[in-house]
Image (cartoon, rainbow, N blue to C red; front, side):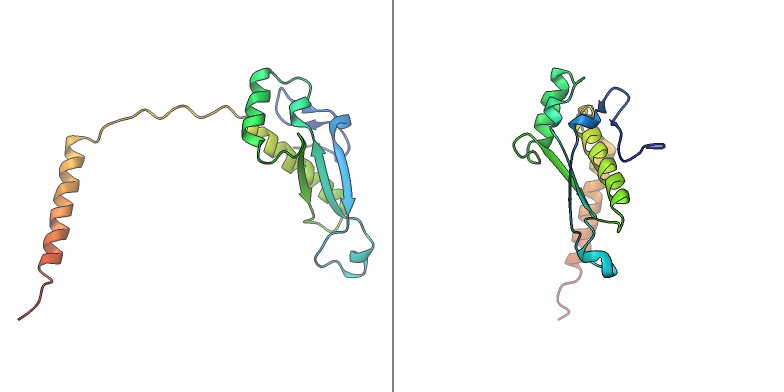
Length: 145
């Protein structure tokens, strides 16, 4: 989000803002290339939050979060990791963006149910005609005695 920093509250949607006190950070050494600093800099970031305990959620939102994030929650805690960048600050920003995206997707309302429709008479006829044409093509491929 524009103007978002790596240290303040995390805006998820218009109605939900994760307070900075609910976020838990963990840092470790990142794998992969990084030159001389790869073994000394703790640039990998893990950001954790307990989404079901966030203030400002309705019971419906809590149920939706529990349903959609159930497989990702460990003891009720959602964790995202970022180690794409060499700088810890950029990984912090990436982790915040990922966490906001996961929460936003989990809170999104379900899509409207599909209206069941029957195929039209013309589409049925076109399908049968195409099947007969294909069958005829295959039948003509027979032996050439």
